[in-house]
Image 1 (tube, rainbow over the protein chains, first blue to last red):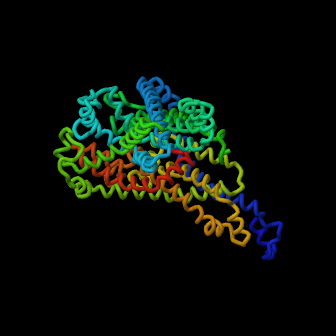
Image 2: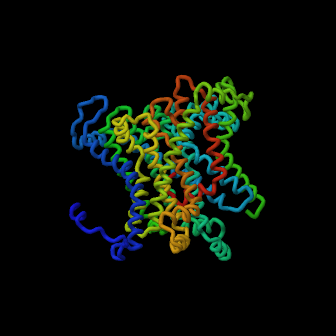
Image 3: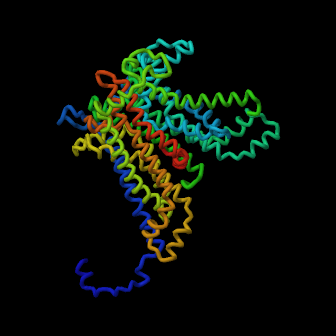
Length: 316
Length: 275
């Protein structure tokens, strides 16, 4: 090949039109060249662990016992799927998803409806809603841990000042009450995001339809039920799927606020997985849990992608 | 809204929202100025008993909080820089070049951002351990790319698609090469979008706890959230120092959000990729 090229007479420096790449072809090549690095990086950091997990999950691989790694088949999955703790954690995660996403949706909708009105302090309110979102989840959880502290916190102080019951509760010692700070901290941090998505949805609704509804004799509640809610549906779906997915993976708040306790009463599935990986150092079992979590997450994600494509925009 | 009770009800609701969002911050600030003795007693007032700066001095003099601050800024900035450069290239390709499979590529990028972080912890831990990369900056920068890059590509693809292509075509007609057109004509117009993507990428990296908790064990390599949480896990809880640390770490972020609120909102909704 090389000799063949070398034996040829060197071509004239003037390129013939046939050999030059067309404008469109060169743009396609440049396009792929531009996209490739990002795709390679993303595939390396996400697909590689995914495949690694699939392989690891079929193996006995405990870091504290070097040299004992061997193939197990589906034994790790069998062990996890028959573990009472795993199912209890799944159940708690489901409970957390329903309660936190439900509350965040209701509060987020109220926030969005308020900020969608025109009033003087609107800019200030919009900014103050967004600030908690920018605080790292673990830091927000740490703060709520201290707010619920009997000494330096404000929760007991406020309950006492308002003569409400509960001022002397030790929140973190109760299997049920320990959820309260977890859910509150999650709400404080994440409601702004839902409010933001819903607000963007509200702003796409033309005001004229409310005018005509009023002329037709609809009251505010009817307009909300029959116009706002149906038109807001796409934004609601997007917000709900997003939050449901991150609620499924909740870890930081639980780790910081309760460490899964008291006992295992606030342990969630991501915590279970983290414990298998980095405390038990049982990477085979950890990988099996990770594969299960990934499948659930990707089903939710696929749902979301379908939704976005239905909604149109540059994705479709 | 048109009646007096409607108006005052609305005003009460607005007040309630502001209190709900901002009162916790006031409490953090108030507690950070309180003496340790007062923090160890049940709270009795909305104002500090006596104002003191000791906790702020302590976090820098005793706890060396400057180090986690610098660590966090460095890893988040590095991840953001890489994400923006690589992401802007990809977004330009997706928004402008006539390539096949755009929907597929964008779908893949979205799917990646849904990939559970917890599922990456184990494999990345083993890889980093094998490379002796635990406790290094790269063990954070690499996973942070998966937090920052998908949203960067999404925001920028949306943003670039809105810039009229005529401007670049005109430049090319005038004989500018493709790289010259991109750098000299397109880039300046695209700056606001790139800036938005950078802020969000930075905030998402700054937000991480799980990766830092899993890959960083030496105190000198801790990021801000990890250092703050470890203030609490110490044998004695330094409440005042945690509060002061939160104020120091959150003030710049709060100011950024306050001034760039519109941009952040636009970015989050254009991308709607990550909470």
